[in-house]
Figure 1: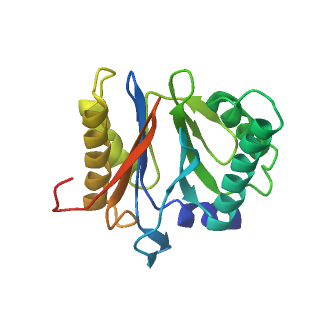
Figure 2: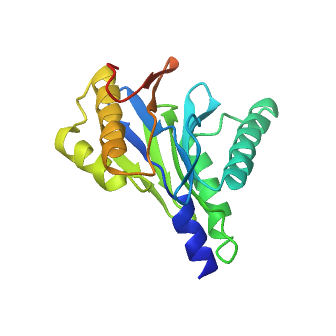
Figure 3: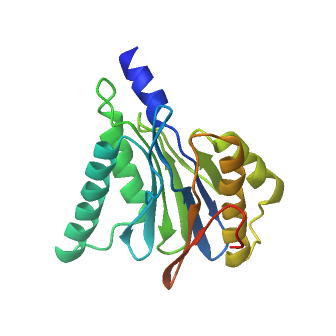
Length: 206
């Protein structure tokens, strides 16, 4: 029961990912909450393993820091040791295996890993190690609202800028309806050239 309570408290956020023909778009709000307390209003929930691989994060801060550093070190160790670059699928699969082995003391995280290797790819992982490849997905307490926006307007033929706009609108809609999602959002597109991100806020043009 204690573990379940902890998971419920720490899931308050909204993150979004979607795939176009040339890019992956990730978005996340900027509010950090602990129960009903707003712990921080300007948290960064999108981090980069490389210029072409990003992760969105939700959950225990300590667990997230460990997992992010672990993935980044794993990728760069393979790179400098002369192995071929680690694919996004391989990185996600490796993390899924790590998470699945900690069922009794799980890392309390919900992670999207997205980016571009030979094509745009997006994976959704929960704290039990369940992994799915997605075309579009929303996680966190505001995900029902965000997913509704994605369901209405997503299609694989969106341009990169249209996809960024859609992801931003999904997060801003969640901000209006979910008290654990707030402040604004960071939206990034990751394509063959690297990543470009922007910040958006309610009542302000993107």
